[in-house]
Image (cartoon, rainbow, N blue to C red):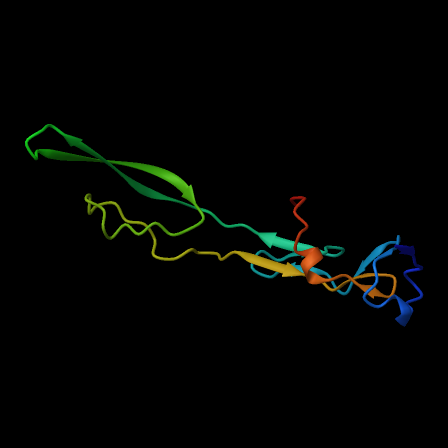
Length: 131
Protein backbone atom coordinates (compact mmCIF):
# COMPACT_ATOMS: atom_id res chain seq x y z
CA UNK A 1 0.00 0.00 0.00
CA UNK A 2 1.27 3.43 -0.83
CA UNK A 3 0.38 6.87 0.46
CA UNK A 4 -1.01 9.21 -2.19
CA UNK A 5 -1.87 12.88 -2.35
CA UNK A 6 -5.68 13.09 -2.83
CA UNK A 7 -5.32 16.28 -4.87
CA UNK A 8 -2.95 14.64 -7.39
CA UNK A 9 -4.43 11.51 -8.99
CA UNK A 10 -2.04 9.38 -11.01
CA UNK A 11 -3.05 6.68 -13.49
CA UNK A 12 -0.37 4.43 -12.04
CA UNK A 13 -2.53 4.14 -8.92
CA UNK A 14 -5.49 2.65 -10.83
CA UNK A 15 -6.61 -0.66 -9.30
CA UNK A 16 -3.97 -0.35 -6.55
CA UNK A 17 -4.50 -0.28 -2.83
CA UNK A 18 -3.70 3.25 -1.69
CA UNK A 19 -3.94 5.31 1.48
CA UNK A 20 -4.95 8.95 1.53
CA UNK A 21 -6.07 11.49 4.04
CA UNK A 22 -8.06 14.67 3.49
CA UNK A 23 -11.31 16.52 3.89
CA UNK A 24 -14.50 15.20 2.30
CA UNK A 25 -16.46 17.54 0.08
CA UNK A 26 -19.96 17.09 -1.29
CA UNK A 27 -21.58 18.10 -4.56
CA UNK A 28 -24.69 19.84 -3.21
CA UNK A 29 -26.90 19.99 -0.12
CA UNK A 30 -29.20 17.02 0.38
CA UNK A 31 -32.84 17.95 0.83
CA UNK A 32 -35.93 16.31 2.23
CA UNK A 33 -38.48 18.26 0.19
CA UNK A 34 -41.46 16.75 2.04
CA UNK A 35 -40.37 18.28 5.34
CA UNK A 36 -38.43 21.19 3.82
CA UNK A 37 -35.19 20.27 5.56
CA UNK A 38 -31.81 20.85 3.96
CA UNK A 39 -28.55 19.21 4.98
CA UNK A 40 -25.74 21.39 3.54
CA UNK A 41 -22.75 19.10 4.16
CA UNK A 42 -24.43 15.71 4.24
CA UNK A 43 -22.86 12.68 2.61
CA UNK A 44 -25.90 10.46 3.06
CA UNK A 45 -29.47 11.00 4.23
CA UNK A 46 -31.98 8.39 5.37
CA UNK A 47 -35.58 9.09 6.35
CA UNK A 48 -37.08 6.21 8.34
CA UNK A 49 -40.86 5.98 8.53
CA UNK A 50 -43.10 4.14 10.98
CA UNK A 51 -46.85 4.29 11.44
CA UNK A 52 -48.84 3.68 14.64
CA UNK A 53 -51.51 1.08 13.78
CA UNK A 54 -53.53 -1.88 14.94
CA UNK A 55 -52.01 -5.36 15.11
CA UNK A 56 -54.05 -8.53 15.60
CA UNK A 57 -52.69 -11.31 17.84
CA UNK A 58 -54.13 -14.82 17.77
CA UNK A 59 -53.95 -17.42 20.50
CA UNK A 60 -55.20 -20.92 19.72
CA UNK A 61 -56.14 -23.12 22.68
CA UNK A 62 -56.70 -26.83 22.18
CA UNK A 63 -59.01 -28.38 24.76
CA UNK A 64 -58.79 -31.87 23.26
CA UNK A 65 -61.07 -33.86 20.95
CA UNK A 66 -60.40 -31.43 18.07
CA UNK A 67 -61.83 -28.55 20.09
CA UNK A 68 -59.85 -25.44 19.27
CA UNK A 69 -60.69 -21.99 20.52
CA UNK A 70 -59.05 -18.95 18.96
CA UNK A 71 -58.83 -15.77 20.98
CA UNK A 72 -58.04 -12.50 19.22
CA UNK A 73 -56.47 -9.53 20.97
CA UNK A 74 -55.47 -6.20 19.49
CA UNK A 75 -52.76 -3.73 20.28
CA UNK A 76 -51.47 -0.50 18.80
CA UNK A 77 -47.89 -0.75 17.58
CA UNK A 78 -45.33 1.14 15.51
CA UNK A 79 -44.50 -0.57 12.23
CA UNK A 80 -42.37 0.26 9.18
CA UNK A 81 -44.86 -1.67 7.01
CA UNK A 82 -48.60 -1.29 6.56
CA UNK A 83 -50.47 -3.91 8.60
CA UNK A 84 -53.40 -5.18 6.54
CA UNK A 85 -56.50 -4.98 8.73
CA UNK A 86 -58.87 -6.44 6.10
CA UNK A 87 -58.45 -9.91 7.62
CA UNK A 88 -58.97 -8.82 11.24
CA UNK A 89 -61.66 -10.68 13.14
CA UNK A 90 -62.79 -7.35 14.60
CA UNK A 91 -64.08 -5.49 11.52
CA UNK A 92 -64.33 -2.20 13.46
CA UNK A 93 -60.54 -1.81 13.60
CA UNK A 94 -59.11 -0.31 10.41
CA UNK A 95 -55.58 0.63 9.48
CA UNK A 96 -54.67 2.99 6.64
CA UNK A 97 -53.88 1.19 3.38
CA UNK A 98 -50.69 3.12 2.67
CA UNK A 99 -47.97 5.02 4.49
CA UNK A 100 -48.62 8.77 4.50
CA UNK A 101 -44.88 9.42 4.04
CA UNK A 102 -42.44 7.06 2.36
CA UNK A 103 -38.94 6.00 3.32
CA UNK A 104 -36.19 8.02 1.64
CA UNK A 105 -32.48 7.39 1.09
CA UNK A 106 -30.22 9.73 -0.79
CA UNK A 107 -26.46 9.71 -1.36
CA UNK A 108 -24.39 12.73 -2.29
CA UNK A 109 -21.47 12.76 -4.72
CA UNK A 110 -18.59 12.80 -2.25
CA UNK A 111 -14.98 13.62 -3.03
CA UNK A 112 -11.71 13.37 -1.15
CA UNK A 113 -9.51 15.71 -3.11
CA UNK A 114 -9.80 14.66 -6.77
CA UNK A 115 -11.07 11.17 -5.92
CA UNK A 116 -14.75 10.26 -5.89
CA UNK A 117 -15.82 7.95 -3.05
CA UNK A 118 -17.62 4.85 -4.27
CA UNK A 119 -21.34 4.76 -3.47
CA UNK A 120 -20.81 1.30 -1.99
CA UNK A 121 -18.55 2.86 0.66
CA UNK A 122 -20.95 5.73 1.32
CA UNK A 123 -23.80 3.21 1.61
CA UNK A 124 -22.03 1.66 4.59
CA UNK A 125 -22.29 4.86 6.63
CA UNK A 126 -24.70 4.34 9.49
CA UNK A 127 -23.79 6.77 12.28
CA UNK A 128 -26.62 9.19 11.55
CA UNK A 129 -27.31 12.37 13.47
CA UNK A 130 -30.85 13.66 13.82
CA UNK A 131 -31.71 17.23 12.96
